[in-house]
Length: 190
Image (cartoon, rainbow, N blue to C red; front, side, top):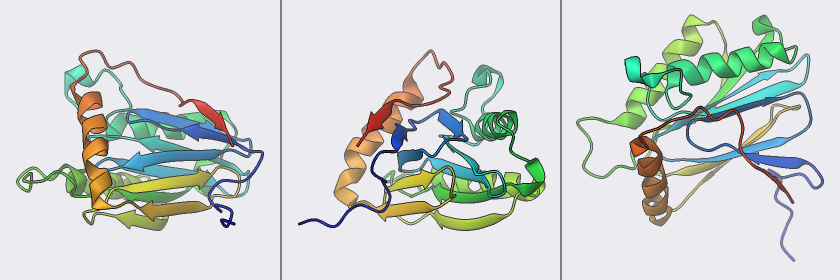
């Protein structure tokens, strides 16, 4: 018999966060995403039990970014604002950050993962949101699960073989011509 997966609790909704997405919730839900060079910030107000996650692809975009959460600068602001609207206190927010893997072969000159990591660390320092957990860089893609009420996060490194389908998905999202911001992912019940 397989041991239960501690990252998914029975009976709680699971919301998948896709590239360019974010979600904040005051309910007990699990937010999940899979990262390559992208970065996710999981923000949590432990006094209110409110948390959220984003998944961004690049640190910033030019005029064409149009407020899209695919860019870190917008994804961070959108997530913080969503948390505040639910009643979180900005002064109580803590962060756990994940991703930024060097999964793009031969792209060392423009290491998107390192740029994303540098951005999120600088942004959180500037906003005085302490980072209390991190799993960054390396060469492996990773799967992240985050519990909004407890603030617990679970990370699983994926085999390098999982990198190719993940890269195809990230590339597809990067090259879409029309980028509508995504406020939350789909809900799957386990």
